[in-house]
Length: 354
Image (cartoon, rainbow, N blue to C red; front, side, top):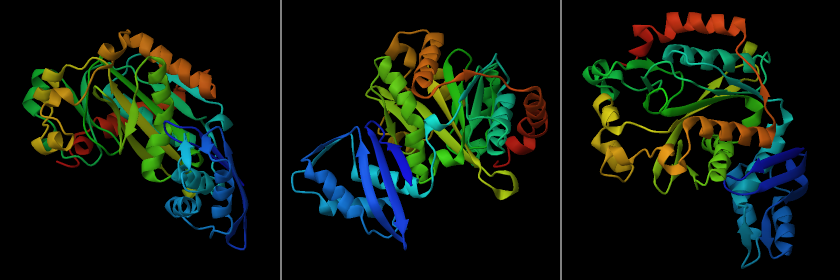
């Protein structure tokens, strides 16, 4: 069995392994990482040899740490990363480059239609009728998008939203509220087969699916990192938040994962504070005194037009994994419009957690 794992901010770890009589055999770890001394690699392989095949990534990491020679230096590699690669091998996980990725980047659409498209396209990936898809959103109107389990009254100031003409919608994924305005926000969705994140914990899957955009930001001169559980941050502050939803496949079979990210390009912090109810506890949790400092716009950090940032992100993804031009099919659009009307545009859904 073969497993690969790109350590977030680090290097690729490759594991080839067999499972015989419930234990790991013939373990071989490789990759483009740096490791000193040379015999440390033999220690890693030896630590994994004979381990129970049901050992979790943390348990495998502990075995490796106990076996490493004194003074071992790892660069671009972690013991846990090796453990995750082993778990992915045993789970028969797939890799980014195993797929023919499709890009969907169409004109401005309503907030409720965006919510519906996420649900429909991810269900199509789960059913095997659509390839893994990167969808870049264009917003047709300003909106606040609240998480699936958030309280509407706790998150949104209805008077502020009405005053600024901002629609409130609820998405299918968890996480916190997003404040978006056309031209001031960069939002994208990844709809991927569940096999791409097999062997990863829920938290690890966030870091794994965010890694490509960290590279894209780095190419634009921004040193960014994944900040658990679902933020992307720089030294200047948070620049993006992610959320996920797992979708079950037909007849309970293998499903798909929706991973979507909203990045602040040029946020109007004053308006955001008039629309969102951002509590003191949330602000203190982020270690800041001002909500304005919690999200730092990409415009200031890159000096690039929004369209240029998006183009560079797409080019970076294409250079890593390949990406062909695609579109929402007529059938997908029809189903999304129906969902937009009957579900995401309904008061029952938006206020399902009052």
